[in-house]
Every structure is written in C-alpha cells, then in structure tokens.
Image (cartoon, rainbow, N blue to C red):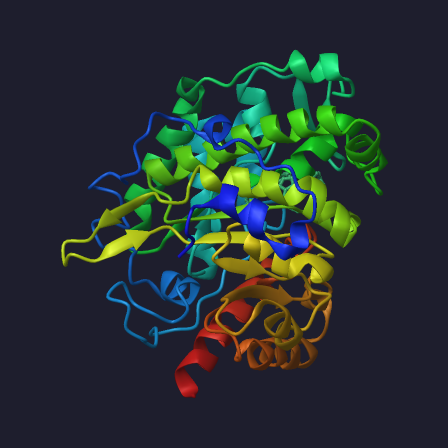
Length: 406
Ligand code: CP3
C-alpha cells in the first residue's frame, strides 16, 4: 500500500527535478477522519477478498497471504454508457451531468453493466467534471463532443476567482453510492476522479482539444498560475474520490486521460506532484475487518499514451497502474517492476474483429500480464459506443473460463 508521504516523495524522487511540492495542508479535506465507516463493504469484509481487490493487492488476501482468486477479474472503462440499449433508454430526456446527479438514475446506470456482463466490479456512473458542476462552474457535456465550459480559465485572475467546493455538495454522490453498494453485495464499486492535468486541460481550453496547447503553454509561460490551477483541480478531484470511498466505494481510479501529451520532464516538473496531492486525499483511509485485518482501498492510476511516464504515475501514489492498448503488459512490468499490479489492456479496436481474432488477443494480454504481481483485465481505453454488448459479455466469460482451466 502507498505510504502517504507525498511531500517527501516530491522532494526525494530522482525523476522530479525541480518539482515544487504542493503544500500538504492545502490538500486536506472533509475533516481529518481517516477511518472508513464500520459498515463500509471493505471493512465489513463483503468486498475485501473479492477477486478484483485480491489482484489489486498483488495476489494477496486481507491477511497478506498469497492467494488465488476463484476467477480472473475483469471490468471495462465506460462499461456503463452508450453501448447498452438499456442505458440509452434510461438517459432519454436527461442531460449527462443531470443524470449523474440524480441518485436513482446514477445508481441504476452503474448497476446495468454488472447485471448484464457479470463483470467483477462496478464503476461509478459519474464524470470527471462533476466536481466543477458541484462547485457552481458552468460546465456541460455536449453529446459527441465532451466537456464544455461557459468561461475558460486562462489567467491568474480567473484562477483566483474559482469557487470553493463545499463537501455538502457531494450529497447526491453519497446517496447514489449508498444505493449502489446496497445492491452490489460482494462485487466492489470503483470510484474515480480526473487527474489535475486532464481536468485543468478542459478548464484552460474550455472544451476538448487534441494537443492541449493551452495548459502546456501555461505551465511554462505562467508557472505560478498553472500551479494554482492544478492545485485547485487536485483538491476538488481528491475530495470527490474521498467522498466516493467514504460512501462505500472499495477502490478508486485517477484518470489522467490526456497525460500522454506531456513529455517526461513536463510531467515530472509540472504535473506529478499535483496528481500526488489528489491521491493524498485518499491514502491512509483504512479500516479493520471483523477478523482483525487492516484494509485500505487500492488506488489505480490510468492514462492514455503514457508508456513513457508509467513509473512516474506509479510514484505519484498509485498501488496499481492502468496501461492503455499501446504498450505490451510485459514491457509495462519491465518499466514499473514485477511487484506492481497492472490493469489492462485489451485493444478496444479488436472488439469489432472476428471472434477468433479477439479471443487470441485476450489470451495474449493475459499471458503478457502474467509477470505482474496482480493483473485485472480491462480495455486499453473506454468501450466504444458502437460496441456490440454481447461481445463484451462473451469476453467476460472467456476471461473467467481461462481463470479456471489453468
Ligand atoms: O462506465 C464508466 O466508465 C462510467 C463512468 C464514466 C464516465 N465518464 C461516464 C460518461 C467515467 C469513469 C468517465 C470519466 C471521464 N469523463 C474521462 C476519463 C476517462 C476517459 O475516457 O479517458 C473523461 C476524459 C471524461 C470527460 C468526458 N465525458 C468525455 C470526453 C465524454 C464523451 C463525450 C462524447 O459524447 O463522446 C464524456 C461523456 C460521458 N461520460 C459519457 C459517459 C457514459 C457519454 C455520455 C452520453 O451518453 O452521451
């Protein structure tokens, strides 16, 4: 598990060069509680020894013993969403962000893919820009486009005018998660947030962009403003993850979807410490199972095109590294060490290939991941909206069968 000493990490890491450590005091929230509630599914023991969490822990049970889960775990990024007809039906007439903030809708949409595909985890139906919306920022998800802000955040004055986020605003999130975990039983719920760079990229550009020139210019041309913006983003994302874990999520994933547009030096100097600050809101959260074992929620760090910075993403405070489809998992293990559990990395493009091609690819991914201490199957990025959901169900049962035969 992660140590939680990120200030030390930023100062001592050989790769971080002149990184400016983010003051820890600025990255504290929701009182000082570090205990997960007794009724939390990790603490009650409901999810603690699930196949997913066992793999995230490097093949160990809550007692710390090496164990072999009864099946090989798999879930899919964007498993909830447009690939499911039942999702399209439920979403009709409600905007994306409004549906995220309707606890009944968000809970039902989260559960749909678990029921349909028998995946080993639910991923909370929400969005990385939800903390912005909850802070009162004018943001929408435009269908087919992505997040669009009414007013981009580009100057020091813009950053200074950013609102503070009151923890009470997370009430719809807490309520949705309560409903979800009540239905999930022993299947863990994964919470998530956007990493500071990816979130700040949307804030500076005001909309999706290909090269993220705005934030990349800002971190060099006006580093103080960049630091203030990334610190703000780390704080709201960290608190969003914390609210989800306190409400019942058993793991959390930080999405740095666009970090692949950064060179290694820029990531080390201008981004890594902020991602560490986001993680610092949720490291150290723990509880004790009825058997007396200490449990913590595994933390996953994922981005696309991040093969060159995987080790730095791990160092930012992750237990598990998510790998996109571009990098073979055996090579990922070489880069982050065999003790690091991996998640990934079925190529979403192959979901449309003939079954024998897809099956051979899934088997290759499993073989490539076998050198890591733990491996959770996933896609190398989200489920494309046009995916035939029956293919996903078939991939899940293939992965579960392969777990049983060898
Ligand atoms: O199953 C899940 O993964 C559920 C939850 C989830 C959503 N967004 C729901 C969603 C998660 C984990 C996210 C994270 C997210 N949101 C990321 C990081 C993951 C990644 O894909 O890299 C990013 C970059 C965003 C921002 C965002 N939100 C984009 C780029 C889009 C797509 C816009 C489009 O229409 O193509 C969204 C919208 C969004 N978020 C949808 C879903 C299901 C589609 C909304 C719809 O149904 O129209």
